[in-house]
Length: 219
Image (spheres, one colour):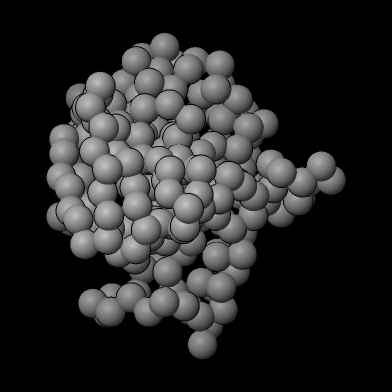
């Protein structure tokens, strides 16, 4: 019961992180979490002895945006969080929760799964994060007209996707692939990529990221 309450609290905080940017009044709890995530990003960057410029080159995210993220004055898109966490050798889930607190059971109940809800209508539900095997499985949902990021991003690892419903256009470099329900795709995450829903209905997909948190600490 305690674990369920803790998970529910994490869900509430995370759902407000990105959604808070659309509220003029702001959400103090969400703002605090944004600042905490920014501090985590800055600390991880410093541990890896990376400059903001070097991190920008690894991710495709501008130096000014990275600076605002670290200072907790900008809310990141899901694509940005994935790209930045990967470049820092982390899984996105590690920015929000203590891996040691993960339940040891091989079953991850829906109530224990953390959802990041973006203001632009994109959600990412963290179904499983396996730090030992460097794998993350998520369920992504895109409202019509939304994208995973404002511009293509890149990071280490491989991605495997399966469209459950709706349609998604996956841009890999200069090539676009239109996927419908039942279609699958795999690609090297170092290729600049962005996912967009150009269809009339919500798109839902299972996405598996492998190896994007495997960068070693500097010696």
